[in-house]
Length: 217
Length: 217
DNA sequence: CGTTCAATTATACAGGTGTATAACAGGATG
DNA sequence: CATCCTGTTATACACCTGTATAATTGAACG
Image (cartoon, rainbow over all chains, first blue to last red; front, side):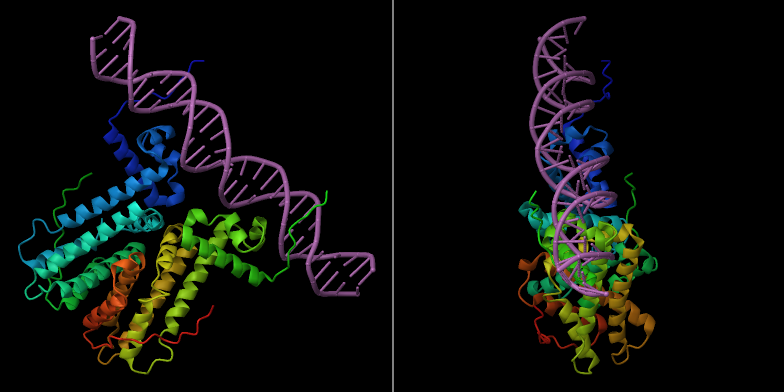
């Protein structure tokens, strides 16, 4: 009876929850829903399977938390795109668009991750709310940038333009992410800026420099 | 030992395969991957679970067939959109766009169905090929319609324009499908036509009548 | 250095999954 | 009406799923 249990360290609730969320997101991105089992998630987070339900009420609860975390990160990432850019509204808009249309935002794994959550979003009202809030948050930011352009301050018109620009970005993000080999380097970004320039009827810098790359691991 | 087995009728391979594919697609659309179990698919197709593997080598094989069938139907649906329309290239283009941005094409279930396949598309090379061919087929049709416009015959430019227009459609299809309550009736279609009109720098009929509605069940 | 508490592990469980196989029966053929 | 083929059903199986619970142990505290 020389029980040789796995040795372990006690960690804070915050660390454990974050590790589990990251593990779940990674597995969902790479292998889809069927790969993100409780056991696989736990293994990747270096804990035993049972511990998951010590930090989350159920697997669905973890899924919900993971989705919320993902949406939160994507929102933060988007909003950060216009920081450190000149005050020129057109330049800010161009930067905002460009960031969404190159890695790491435009990425196959992220598209699939997002897509995999769609069914959960339908079933779970809380996740639906997060989905809606994230989309509207992104679009509202776009609308604000558009209204800052000269002569584009009408909210109703800006709303329609924001929806259209958002669609261009989403569509290109989707296609560039799922068919990366079908486009030349930078082509998606270029096409996106040109299209949005046409939609808004305003000149945009077609070449936007890669922003601050302070590689966070 | 009065075996009371379920009575049955023998059906053609074609009918059974189609019934199974429809059953699988319906379940995948409504409940996602986890709902489309072998038993649920069989029950909805009114056969016993074991019969599935008499018509398909495996569940993955059925999934593959279902995806191919779905993509085929969507392609046919798209190509039919311009039939019966006047010879005016702009009118044809408008009809093509409008059909994609209203039901039954723009539909939440269909978006989720499409999204659920993304992980399979990544893993299975055959499904990846179908995905790519479907996307390129749609886009090529768009490009042909664009090149038919007056003064838009340059293939390279038309390609970029087609990618942009495709993105607008895909993005709006996505958003209109997943957040139907966030848009007024016909708003998505209107925005799409306006945006594509701006991208192509050409006037488009902003109101496109609903085409032939020969309700097939 | 003992005590104590909760974080953590291990194990068990009921149910579901895709698959394999044997028994049955519909219906065409003679 | 009897025969035969094969489409079809039923059952069994090994494995995996999320969850519940008891046993263990890290580490903070007195």
